Image (cartoon, rainbow, N blue to C red):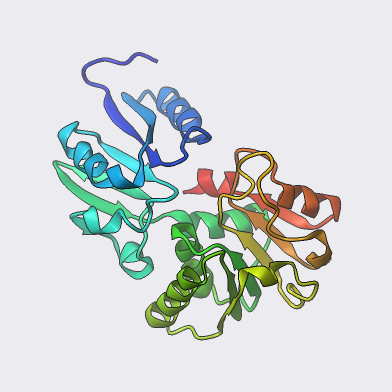
Length: 257
């Protein structure tokens, strides 16, 4: 890679960020297409998010992706946002146009494209359980509702955040078949009865030894398991594979966005 004074800087803001594969395929794409760009991972702590966003302008960074845990908090720091961000309340991409920072969200679209094209799964009229209530959950849940799911269950460690997500979906989408279950209920043997799609939107599984959020006993043969974690084969994906269930990790979602 030939980096020079004309090279345009892009990257990803997150914490953690060292696991990200985005620099690998983004830089490969730049090289393959002959674009004079470079893509860099930036570790950004929550308390430094505003400074980091201001740095996009100060350093003339062309644009960045936003990942855990900044997708919600970054929105209020932007000059303009697209319609998806207005509806979902989360952004995963910032474009710098002459110092004007505009936010976009491609997570939901990438997820649907991934699960339909790579997983052969059609969300319409399906019952879904989502683990997590962070920025990725907002994008995925919102897009699933647009695709016509019949109902949604939310399970999150902090119930207050699950309630915020539920209220958001009811207000923005006028979608009311949303149920919250306590985090302690996630391993109940009847939890996934009638559920067609299980989506883990948390970072659990990103590291070896992370807590297993779902027990093997709750998985059933008609379930599709989706884990947005992509840097390793998570225990959830291993369980789904061992039981012969349809499953995907988040790599195809990442490349589809």
